[in-house]
Image 1 (tube, rainbow, N blue to C red):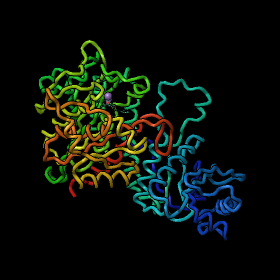
Image 2: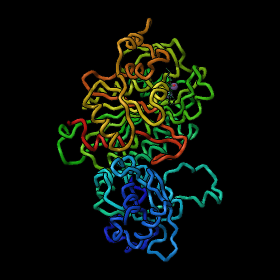
Image 3: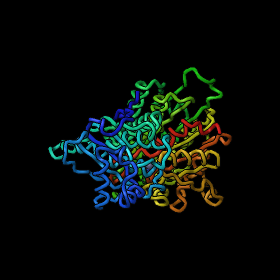
Length: 513
Ligand code: BES
Ligand code: MN
Ligand code: ZN
């Protein structure tokens, strides 16, 4: 079962009674001004450090700028070994996202500076309510220590930087304990998705990803079925099959199921289908990618890794919904057996597709997976995919694209994304003129329509495989799946963007509203 990487403990006694490694105190600009004008309001509560913090602010050593983390040199035998101050900037504007990112940077540093435990406190009441603050703390603490370095020989300098933070203590009045625990599980799910997504293509190929899914399903009490290429042919999944044809490792489809035990009847609880793009490596196929674009394409399986991790999260949180996770898995390679431009393939729902470009493979594997998901008659379908460079060009590296015709679904997902600090922007899900370019002269559809409007084209292509009566959203994470530098809750490498948003959506029962 998924478990948070750090343990969380409530601690509501005065700071001076805390004998552990470190104390982290949040300071907003209002506190800073107060300290400069007179004396910190909460000075008593901050003893034995209050007067000292007061002094530091008055001298201008620490200005409480947003994201600023300051290690306070302690000259006397303090109760704790280390004291850190973290700036929130404008205290009124410091929302949960600011808190989450600042917590992550501060806790990351505290962990790297050999503190095993930290007590989190603040100079004055946070502007963020305890539920949101608790979630932010759980997520930040659970994510900030993440690194993917299992293949790296650790030299001494780096060993010295090893993250050791294991325990986070917090006052329950400031951070709601249940939300903290839940945030820790969200983070654990996201870390799991990162672990799988970060593995290179020579380690994780389609059959291996199927095995990984089986193992994780078993560990988390999910049922799991893996369809190999022979079964895919029997199931008429010609679109998924054609993408994997030139790889030496055949494609597969993974179907994970979570069913709530007891509680409400199935009907009331609702049924959700999540679909993920799982291209273990996207070379582009015969339309081979140029050098600049082929690197990092091990990350093209992130959607499927996210779905797998969300399923584990749903099980760990014992959520009250029937959830289906579908991973469409293939390796897109060139070769003698590869699918060619001009080829015509038939998808599971009977529609024929003319291959215009073999690098537009994600929509092909998703086509069959979405048709399959529709057959399950869920209340809602959400797919997550590193689908188009166009989406990355439009929104940049920090915001994912949301495509849906369903306003209520868009609103619920946007709310979940905002609550969990994952930036999501709604894009046009359809366009009459782009729709016309979907038509083929020789088949029902073409799989590519050129560069302009590429993200909307892809979304419209996918919609051809979703049953019209089912609310459906497509999330394009091509721009956000891979982080070049660490920042806030992100470490270098796979971000697993979307895991927190989707878990929040399912937790909140967003489809019921
Ligand atoms: N996996 C890529 C999309 C991608 C691009 C993900 C950049 C992450 C970062 C996808 O399979 C792809 O190659 N899309 C093409 C589609 C085109 C051929 C219509 C693209 O976006 O260029
Ligand atoms: Mn591609
Ligand atoms: Zn791709």
